[in-house]
Amino acid sequence: MSVMSMTGFGRGEAANETVKITVELGTVNRKQFDCAVTLPRECLSLEPALQNLIRGRITRGYVKGQILLTPVTASLAATLNLNGVREQVDAIRTVATELGLPHTLTASDLLTFPDILKPRLVPEDPQTLWPLIEQAVNLALNRLLAMRRLEGANLTADIRKRLDALRGIVDEIRALAPQVPILHKELLEKRLNDLLAPSAVIDPETLAKEVALFADRCDISEELTRLDSHFTHSVKLLTEGGACGRSLDFLCQEFFREINTIGSKANHAGIARHVIAFKAGLEAVREQVQNLE
Image (cartoon, rainbow, N blue to C red; front, top):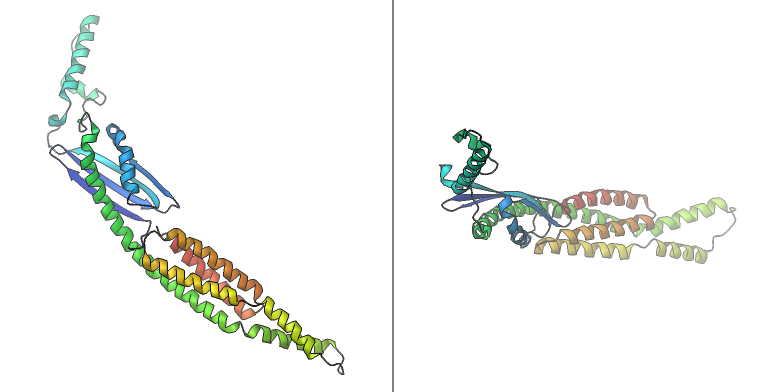
């Protein structure tokens, strides 16, 4: 299963002998699923079925689009509701007769009638149009999802590259970690020598205890192990594909938690620089992850 981006666009069409259905759908980032597709007023009863159809194929992101109905026949008169026109004209003539007004109605006056001159493209039961709308929506979704898959593949390659760079930073931190208690011991001895009289003797056992306590406080082995686990899990999610955006976003939070702890515990300038670089790289990863479904 492919990793998908939340951004895409698709267009689909379907037609019968009288009407053509045109569907345009676009998606952008959103934490949850949301859908706002404009239907013709006469087809609003089909909205629940439309929502279910789209929700069945898109799990995350904001879907926005429109469904348009246009006549297939070249002649507008062939698709007009002529019975409705006749009813309007008869009603106007009846009123004119009762009020003693002249019958001045012309063909051009029909253009002023609200709605009546619009082609009647939707049958009395809009449900009969659903198979045609469903066909056009599925075609639009196919193209939209193809675009999301393509962008998802590009995002996956970029995220993998950035994760590899972060793993390299962690390896450098791991190499520096054993030096922390050694440097602390050397610094502690120097300070004691500066403070004590030249004839004073530093108790090796006391010094060893102090260094051991410091080494325990600055030990980052557990954090490094958890970081390795997060790297493994992230790669697994990207490999398996599917809707992994939320899981990867959560892992980014866990990455930050561990690296932040390392920065707090490891009293070492070199490690501190690597922690800053890791945080900057992680922010770039998180921005990309938030584009995934």
